[in-house]
Image (cartoon, rainbow, N blue to C red; front, side, top):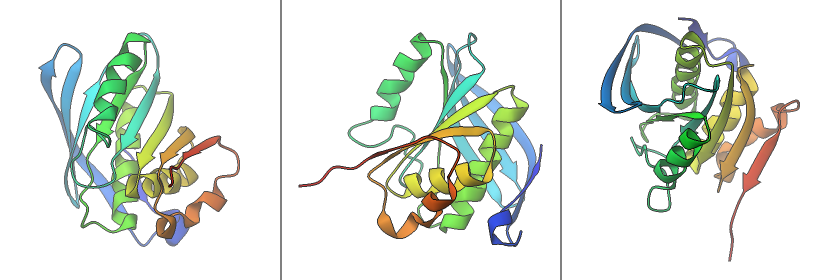
Length: 173
């Protein structure tokens, strides 16, 4: 695994992956654990054998693997798997800073690279949208980004994403 550092902030934050573990939940669905020098991170991996690409779902906070709107991530993951696309739904702790959340997302990209994923699309909602944008700006494996209702205070990194497609979905009244 790679040693992950936040080069946009002078490499002040470093995370190293010490080990990973996988626990089967059902056919082609696994709970994945990453033990890092900063703690344990968990995710749900839904595997499709036919494509080397993955969608990485970044939640707005907590270990909300199913996403907003009553679990839309979980619904879409099944449809993507049927279309031959794997998904990784990561967990984030709301109390973590944006920088810590980006390090967590970068560690999952390192895991996916080690597992053979060639390209990753990042999808994030709320605070996870800012994490997805900042992560995509730092890692070449992230090929495109879709963000849902980004929190404006955390979106400074959007200006650094110049070579990757980005879709922004934001509702209003």
